[in-house]
Structure formats: C-alpha cells, structure tokens
Length: 334
Ligand code: ADP
Ligand code: MG
Image 1: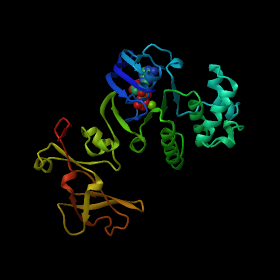
Image 2: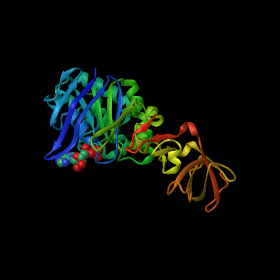
Image 3: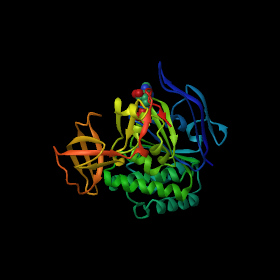
Image 4: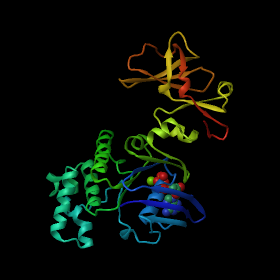
C-alpha cells in the first residue's frame, strides 16, 4: 500500500516560504509526476515526503497514518536521485544488497530479491561489475535496483534521468514505465521536463513557485489547462498566445492556439504573415511566422515536406474548436 496524503503541508527556509500550504493526495499504485520550472519547489516537496526535510506546518500521512515526524528510514519509501550515489568500490550486487544488509534481511532472502530486481532491470549479467564499469543508464538502473529490494510502499524519483543523454533518456523513460506496470507500486517522480511528465504520468502535478497550478491526467492538462501558465508549460512547441482585438473577438483577454491546431496555406486563410525560421525535423516542420500583427512569432506545425521558405507569405487558419480562452488574470474561460 502506498497512499500519500499532504494536508496543508508548508515549507519555509528561514523567512522565505518556498511552499505555501498545499494539499495533495497520491493514490496507491499511482504514477504521479511533479513538473515545473527549476526552483519551483519540486525537490523540496519530494524531500518533505521522504522525510529528508522537516515540514514547517501541516501533516503528511502515509497509508492513513501520520508520518510527519517519522524518520526517513521508517517511512517505507525509497528514493532515487539524479546522482546515482552508488558505492564505487562495491560490486553491483553489493550496492543493491546494501540497504537489505543494513536492515538485517536474511541472506537467502537478499539473494532472491537481488535476482528478481536484476532480472527486472536487465542487470543480471552485470552483478559482479563495479559502477565504474557501467554506462550511465546501467548505473541508474543499479540505483533503482537498490530501491526495489527495499520493497517500499512508494518510490520517490528526483530527476533520475537528467544525467543521461537524450537517446538513453527515452529508453529509461519506457523502462521506468514498464517497471511501474510490473511492480504496481506508487511512484512519485520529479522532473522539469514536460515530455517526461506527459509520457510517464497517470497524474501530473504542475508546480509554479511552490503552488500547485493544476492536477490532472496528461490529456486533461493538454486539453483543458486551467490557466495560461499550464497552457504554456504543457505541450511542445509551446502554445501561441494572442491578445488584443483578435482575442476580444472571442470574448477573451487572450487566446491560445497550439502549433498543431493551425493550418498553413500559401494562398488563403484567416491570418496573414511571413515565414521566418523553419525547423525541419523530418516527420514535422515547425514554421515560425512573423508580421501577423497578432504576436511577435506564431509557431505552426506543418507536414515534413512543406513548400514555403523564409520570407514567403503564408496564411494561417486556427481550428476554432481548439482555441483556448483566458481572462485577464490568466484563468481559463470555459
Ligand atoms: P526544484 O527542485 O523545483 O528546482 P527546489 O525544491 O530545489 O526546486 O528549490 C525550491 C526553492 O527553495 C528554491 O528557491 C531554492 O533556492 C530554495 N531552497 C531549496 N533548498 C533550500 C535550503 N536548504 N535552504 C534555503 N533555500 C532552499
Ligand atoms: Mg530539483
């Protein structure tokens, strides 16, 4: 069981309130991602759950029991960090065994858990190597293995893939998702990368300056962002925002249109502009359009092969049912 409840939890460092009182429930078995820009309080929130920081107020409950003052080792949670924090002089086997040794788990039980974790993480052939003889991705898998053998009620991950190169990150993202399906254990995962959040989460918690902006499934957040912050943070390339007379036509202070919800044509459409930089990704092209009189740049996604070039005139047409409307304070208008 791994149900975690935060009840008016707040955190201040000295005079500075990094997390104002915050409520959140993480259900047993859920994959929850905390996402937000650097410095928004993601790690602090995770460390409060882990017990590595003391709360300045409020209550943390794990499986319904008050854990606010329970020491980290007794909370039944296992944390995986960006820096793998492996012992360099110990073999993979000994690194994975370490928390069980500390907890006095009998040797045969240790061996069983190591074998199972190694199998789940494709580490079986590497158990006798030292961390220095492994790739970054394998090292991170060892760190995850060390968490698995503790059989925690929940895993806490703090940007575990940030040290890996782009291709490895994609692979590890899928491995961690697979692992979640296999173990069916609660996972709380911190990242600044909205793509990781979108691809891995059952539930995303968007944080901004210590405040929860929105909680929802990836598609909830994509389809109905509660405010302009979430609208601009979730989705890549970013949503375009337009203010002024064009927004007023839609009864809004500003409207948002995602690049994938705009059609581009050389001859006809709603908004006229000039093609600036084109980013060719092969499958898609992102055109950056200027001189529309609506915003400095409007980004539009077109097919891989698109016959317009820098300086050409282009017409854009938004899908009207995909336009997001916001009021002056940034809140969504339904
Ligand atoms: P994130 O993980 O989202 O990048 P953090 O949780 O690390 O953000 O930090 C949130 C804010 O709290 C930042 O402004 C950071 O400078 C501040 N902070 C974090 N830890 C401490 C600390 N031990 N003492 C003082 N300020 C801290
Ligand atoms: Mg952090």
